[in-house]
Length: 322
Image (cartoon, rainbow, N blue to C red):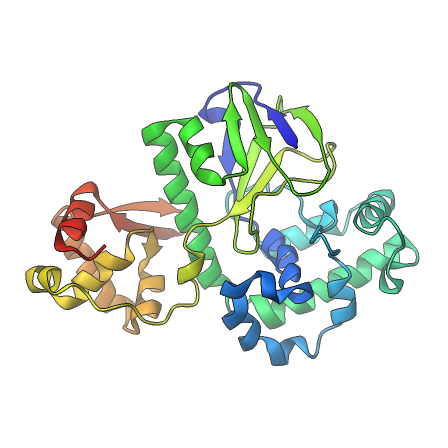
């Protein structure tokens, strides 16, 4: 079990961040064992041809049978909305000793052939492979992925503001809990350490490629918990279920469809994609629903995310739609 002692048991000790690099590296798990990630199968099918042109032996070697990855490839993000170019640039300065130690931690018995050699050269090969993987398989889909991750962060922020820090951790993942001033993460692996967040804080990073909460292998790494993001089941949806007749008769079928989708926060761009209409059309409905008090909105980075208000939740529940 991993334990983080919060230096101050308040909201200021915890922050959220989204890292495209972390998502890129964690997604390598789907290449090693796609059966564990059924909700990502549409993406795997869509990128199958592109992956055929990549150094798959090297990419697969960056995880092991337990689906661990080297800590240096999943560093704690230091900005709420990371940029892949900046994250790749930061990796180029990784010390050779760290590269070697982290690879050995993932493959303690023997390094795969593609990861052998001078650490500096290995790092260059790894970064080149990851950049190619990003361009071929992630860049076209990242805006869609990011919208789901941003919606998760907005939801966690609402829980934390309304119900407190302990409730937010309880909602995060069944394997994470806050007991007093200690946050514990229960892992499958026989791995245990305890460290303080003093002077470093605790970063929470939602992920589309984590089935349960994870933390760095090494206690020397900055405190971080990566956890499964809400809304993953909606990531590759292209259509919605029919609206309940009662709600549709009251506010119209299009707006009823939006209300059904907005149980979890989403941007107008994401909603337009899922409904198969233009963002302009969606924005007209969103403005009307928000003016009626059925929706609320919150800005996250450059995106505005919409979600049902308490009144909107009551209306949808009363219509029998949920």
